[in-house]
Length: 250
Image (cartoon, rainbow, N blue to C red):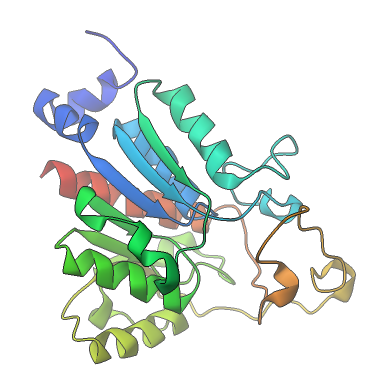
């Protein structure tokens, strides 16, 4: 029967479309990278999602986040993303979790329920917790390294974490994962040398905070505010989604 996924079925076949429809994917972080991951997975026919983010859409997200428009500023990202998923596929199941994933609330998530886990968060502590929980449950996991302060989307690669280079976040993750005995981890990372953001206080979040009311983690609390652009984190997110689809259907 002709449907919104018919063109995808021409590539993957009916059996794989059924696998995707029955798959449950957890995506941690619904920002510049994670939003595009979820968008591509929903448009590829994945039938069940757990989306995790405590943030609200901010004016400064509009330059790169697929869920960010003037109409969505101030709304919870997981609520906006849920609406998008259901507009694409009304039959999809979505569990939206308004929280920042950390060791303190890790017990609230049952990773054994997931068919795949995507780490698209920014902080090392959260990334490590997500990865370790997935590994303990033998659930496939893919992690995104740094996408900020970069301008060349062609320099993203898929690799094992221990074969990465250049990326400062990947360097930290290699060290911390080695300490924890993790032998391998599929990641998306960029070989582009990150630039330093221009220091212009007239457009700085530190002096002109525009975080929506009720925002828990404000930019003013961050150690560093990276520069970003529309075509870099989006590409990383689409590459991540592509790996998830290939792994679920191979």
